[in-house]
Length: 207
Image (cartoon, rainbow, N blue to C red; front, side, top):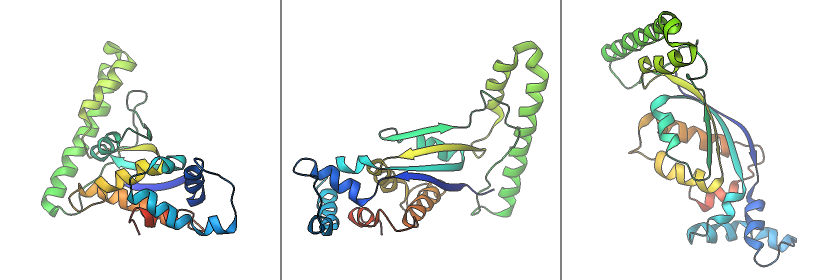
């Protein structure tokens, strides 16, 4: 199963970023000021004045392998992440990712290894629950879960943090799986009806 990304909501737009910057002078808007939004955002981004870009938010739901989830967790400033936890429930749907750039031989090996781990995960819960209790057996049974196991993660960035995330993860030397997640996130944002972040995308050279 491939990783999946859904944009479930957003707040803000180019004008919100611009008005945040104009707070230091005047937030009063007219047609002339609005026409300068793109130029202003380019100036802010190119000169490292990124605080105004913290005033928006982008909210995603991601089905992600655990290895990529760890990549997401490393971005903690201006990022809110809540992930599906095997500590609080037994994960019944054993989703996992098989790299599509592996040979068929190694794909089959990883599939077998993962499915064995999933089988043992459920077996140990059933077998040791009477001795360890439901809470402890669930949290320790996770040791059978592999890094390619998929969980659901709720991820929200402000734009400044989103641009930082893309700068690290949406690039050729990033791990393929997290790179694909980052690229999909960006395409979803670009595809928002009306393109509300058009000038911001250009300001950060993401178009």
